[in-house]
Image (cartoon, rainbow, N blue to C red; front, side, top):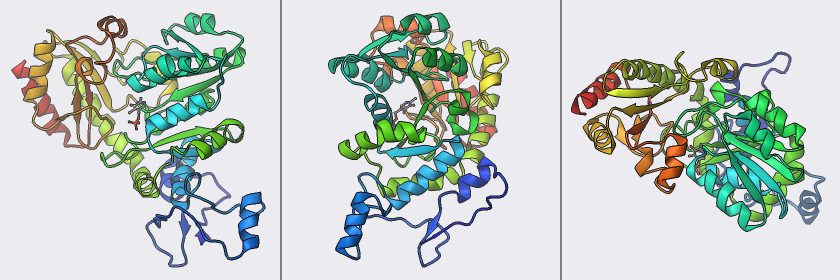
Length: 399
Ligand SMILES: *Cc1c(COP(=O)(O)O)cnc(C)c1O
């Protein structure tokens, strides 16, 4: 096996590293990354096996905890994020669950923003307390609430920004400072921003998690996740947890995701340009009561977006003048954008959060988050911009 000989005398930019980082060619010299679809590894001798297990030979042992194709994906993610370490997982939820569970024990406490992806909220609100880890949910935009919620036994703060589906933005740098003053780590779910537009580690976060199912795959093929952090977090907490509990990413899916990373920057750029055009159309339309897009100057936290994100992203949230009936009529009239609950796909996707992703929440909890019956979330894809604009315009006429 030979490693790619990337220049080390000058810093390479993310778009280059996403294409070349983490290559490990076999003796055949293949151009496209080899797919090591193997669960285990054979050792030449008994002594070699012993050396692998005592750590004196750092090679692979078992694909539950390491695999060359999975490593390629992890090394590309590290390069993109500027992280010391990364561990891939079978899904985004496996990444979130591992990142939170690996660092707590009964008696500990975590603080999280209320506006979380539904399953993340389950982990914090229901799962952790069952094992004696208390949790407090706060309004993520209110720094005072983060400060007030911290206790001596607080181990972690957890948030996502921008939030799903309301696209609220939280001050990662300020919240990281509050976490650190309290002796806690800040974990950020960075799915909505993508690693191209926001790098939470550079803003002071300690751990970043992704559902690679979204923009990183970007073509709706596989589930996947990844946790990025310091080497110390992996050694102290994550490595043993993953190794012993086994939420491992399949080498096949890792290969798909590593190839997805090669085009990530390009895709996010184009999807974002499409999203900005759709946001402008919706903002000026009489049938739209409220439009939220992180890339517009009328976003409630536009200054914060400029400070911590390199663009407005690929998602648009809007509220029609009406109720569930109007939202459904709009969705049913779309011909190009699909009705689904995923996001970050090449195909545009419309979601009605109140009846799908956030159906599990009580009406009061939805109201508190600003998720009304007339609200829709559009994940803007890679289609031709004018076709998408026409699709949205026609659907608005049907409302
Ligand atoms: C989709 C998503 C997840 C969960 O990821 P899966 O790959 O579906 O398990 C977690 N957080 C956010 C913000 C998401 O959008």
